Length: 364
Image 1 (cartoon, one colour):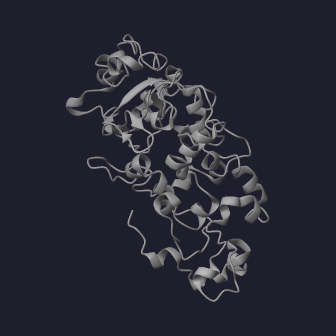
Image 2 (cartoon, helix red, strand yellow):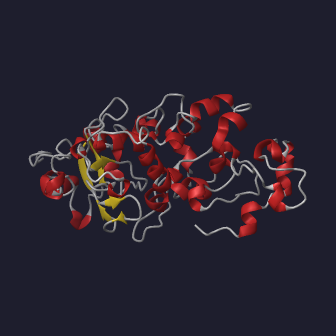
Image 3 (cartoon, rainbow, N blue to C red):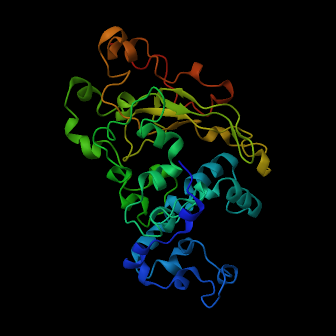
């Protein structure tokens, strides 16, 4: 993403004043000293992003949205806390030292109302998108993929060399909000443990239920295979990551593995799903004073995934040419399934529930 010029970050365009928010005095939201005659004095007590306190500054007009957003994973990042507690056996929220480390290293990724509807996120250095004008629908590039860019953004837009854009982007050009509605992003007032627990998370079947019997492959596999198993291109995995200044211990890599569903539920009922290796290791949080994760094996390191690189024809659906047919690729060679041999020895116990036994799937 190209950086904004300094003046672009702060310029309030005249069009802003014709909107509803432009009728509100600057100090009503941003505080500061309106009697001052120079910038330094005017900015004493300045509140740069009033929407960090949405209850005070936004709830008066947007009551239900703010009430729900206070419990959304976009704001509270519950997924991170849930998974850390499961592996570490202790809560980040209950330890001021851990909470400070979290805020320094990871907490900048949470968002506020303004960082979706007015400016770029703080994690991408901020700056107005349209001269302080409020946008009802966030900008896909400046807001959505500014945070969700390293996998979701580059895959969906076809920015990874050798890969095609997601079929929903080309030729249809569907933007993030086509699938991810405001009821999901703002939250529903129910606090969820992870992002896949959020009500209204989109599923392929929401739009494509009529395709259940579109061909023999759908008829056979509709109930047991996640759609992405066949229709995703290969996907990015990461291994050991270290909090603090460490980062990834080794580069990310492209793979494709199908495994047993680790979060099987009424909302995610398929037996087999796409998995990606996540950037975790036993000493990920050593810099935070947590040298080991005593319950490391309580969660798989190969995680349920929903790639944003969908194509009708992929390595798994192309039944023409030298690649052979689905029976050869999945039922004979079985090359795409996560087996014990694909898992590091120290992570076998953590992934027992997602590893596919050697005799599955059966030969045709």
